[in-house]
Image (tube, rainbow, N blue to C red; front, side, top):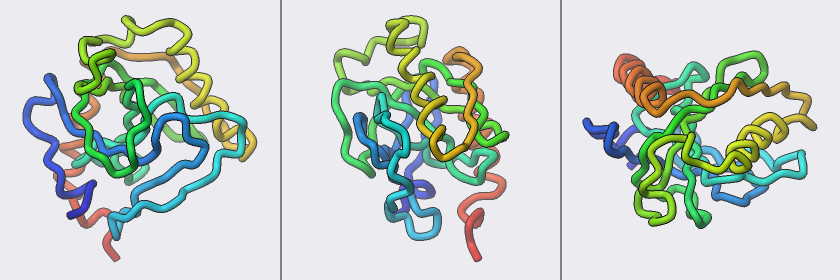
Length: 180
């Protein structure tokens, strides 16, 4: 079983879809799925004095411009163990550029967390929570000298359209994206 390739995205992403957590909330260690093996590796120790503001992972069955699955930030009360599958709903997308390349992050809520389950839009979140998310993604690579900029949040509908487009891209290139 490979978390990127073998977990079905499902047909009703408007209601919910699976997210695979790589890095738990409050961590200063970034984990990443190895594309070929499906195992987790330590990608980096964060250079900056920041920690992940939410659980961070990916949407299986998608292929972003960086030839990796689409990133997702999952809001919930507690850190989630790496490689756990959580049921989420997209509430927006953080528009972002990192190292000169587009690197958008879907913002989602954990549907089995009663504090976040009813949230439907990023606009329902506290302004400070949104500022923390944006600030984290602008700062977490600064001491590595990788420029990251954010361009605000887009709607849940735009997030769902992005997921569908990158699922279609995955279907075209599929499992062989990192072969050989």
